[in-house]
Amino acid sequence: QVQLVQSGAEVKKPGASVKVSCKASGYTFTRHDINWVRQAAGQGLEWMGWMNPNSGDTGYAQKVQDRLTMARDTSISTVYMELRSLRSEDTAVYYCARRNHINSFDSWGQGTLVTVSS
Amino acid sequence: SYELTQPPSVSVSPGQTASITCSGNKLGDKYVCWYQQKPGQSPVLVIYQDNKRPSGIPERLSGYNSGNTATLTISGTQALDEADYYCQAWDSNTVVFGGGTKLTVL
Image 1 (cartoon, rainbow over the protein chains, first blue to last red):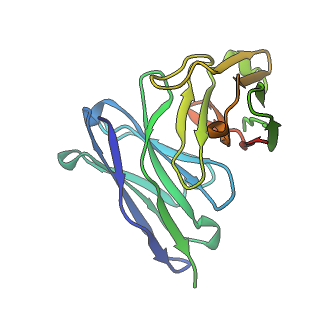
Image 2: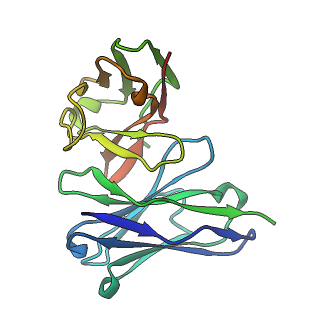
Image 3: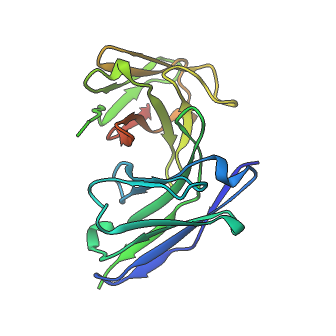
């Protein structure tokens, strides 16, 4: 079955960077975009961007585009999300999600808590 | 930028029908998805392309989208339906989520 497994929780200081991984299994990795969505405690879902694992093409939300980079390693079916110049407002659970052929997110990772604190 | 607006909360009695709305400019021209999220869990897709259910989602959940409003309807609401619900659409190759609605089953 389709599975997305994310890396573990991170604690970072303001100004640092964080890199979260999302390992896919159960389907052909290069056939589906991976999106990243974050959720601050008690808040709603915020879309961050997408990556096409086949071409490497990306698209980022305007709010974070200057600090966000997505990358992939097709040999291990993994997508990475790196957020730089972290601020306290970046404290959130970060999810990766698979976009299916009908433009919905049909499988989600378990989430990775990123805490930004001095 | 495009916005989707949901009521923060909806309450319903067990067995009754709950309706959660999602409003956006000409939303009926877009496809809407709905996600259910329970505390401490990842979101789950419950409706896609306005009114279709993924495998395993009960028929009690249905969707409709027209004009400026999409609606998620839960018939015969059960305690296990208590969760946060988010609508989602695409606009200019970016994803937009509604602010979420907390469904309480009283």
